[in-house]
Length: 347
Image (cartoon, rainbow, N blue to C red; front, top):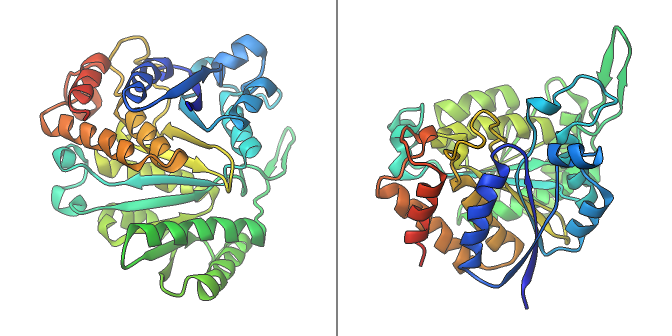
């Protein structure tokens, strides 16, 4: 029976990196793809970034594959106008996607593409586990002509479930699991609750996992000074958004990083970390590798197809080792050339 995947090409380079990814998946198994408009494309067609029909289709799928959303065309400071990013927030909320996993493991062939020295990043293998449905992004918002506010709130239940995801991920990654919980407990009441709940969870359910607490500003500093000290990082929504993008640059390009957004039981959503890159849309030079690696995460975390996921990761690494470089990696290979290089290494 075919696995049913809803595809959301979105905006900018989204459609350009989605098409080769579906070709890649088509070589690995029996999949049924159902495409829907999303983000700015959906705003143009329907006046909203996420329609009820699209959300319903995603809920009934086995997995959701998203390319990219947004662009200057839809940028606005008017709170009454739709924004592409509202579709992302709505999809996360509608699917109950509370855990975002972003692996950061520089590929040896790209060590010299990183802005950090090779000896600083060599051996880095970390995972950022970001809480996705709470915090300041979803809190009550107010706006007047002269002031504005965004409420940041978390419940014990929300903190426990993301903490549990992080501890389990750490156990799956290493025989010496370590979780770094990042907060701002010296200032924020939500962070004090966060720390208290994470400590209690570890004592009750995960005593075999090493736990440390690092303030977010210190964590940001250590990510660029000694990234190898981290294994699994767990943190709240906004801190995770910022830190995971910072960590992305360790790999040499944000165009290389995949992500998975998971719920307790429903379909997961898989997407590259990079944006829609409207400045290069239509030029044929978009790097499809993060999208390919997001498909690998879909195969592994969304469908349980570990060997197929490993095949994709191996093909990407082999292509890079053979010299493949897209413009963001300092080369001149376009989307099609990169696709053919990976396909040629797919076993």
